[in-house]
Length: 241
Ligand code: 6PG
Image (cartoon, rainbow, N blue to C red):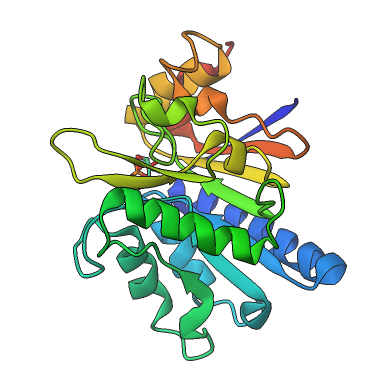
C-alpha cells in the first residue's frame, strides 16, 4: 500500500490543500454514487479545514453525510465535544442542512453509545460487511494515536465491530471507529501539524515500534488510498528518513 506525504509551509496552506482534496472526493463520489460519506477527524488540527468547508456552497451538502471518526463521551455543549466543534463551525452557514452531521449519542453510556452509532452506520451502509467511507479524515496524536485508537488499548484488537468505546483514565470515555471500519475507506487523509507531532509522524513513516506502540501505523486501507498532509513543523524529522 502506497503512502503519499505532502508537506506544506503552515496549517493554513495545509488546510486549503485539504479542502481542495475533499471537494474533489466529494465531486467524484456524487458523480459515481450519488452520495458522499465523510468521516471527520476530531481535535484541533482540522478546525481550519472545517471553517473553510463551512463557506463552500459548492460542496454537495444535500447529498453528503458527515460522520465522526471518534468522539468524546461528553455533552454537545462541552468544549471537548467533536460534534460540538463541528456543529459550531457549520451552523454559521444557512445552506448547510442541520441533518448533515451524524453525532454520537453521548447521553448514553459509552458501550451503548458505540452500539447505537454502529447500528446507525450499519443501516446507512445497507448492512454491508464493512462501512465504505468515501473519505476518512484522521489526526495524529503525539503518542501515535489516531481517532481514539490509543497505544495498547483494547480497541486496537477489535476485528469485527465498526465502533467501540474506550475508557482512558482519567479523560472522558471515547467512542471510536475501529481499524476494520477505517481501513475499508476509499480514501484516508491524515492532517498533521505542529512540532509536537514530528516524532510520531517519523515513527509512522520510519516504521519504528509495533502498531500497538504507534496505532496510526495500523491505518492501512485494504483497497483505498492513504495520504498524509503535514506542515513543515510536523514533517521536520522526516527529511532524509
Ligand atoms: C480526537 C481526535 C484525535 C486527534 C488527535 C490530534 O478526538 O482527539 O480524533 O485522534 O485527531 O489527538 O489532535 P489535535 O489535532 O488536537 O492535535
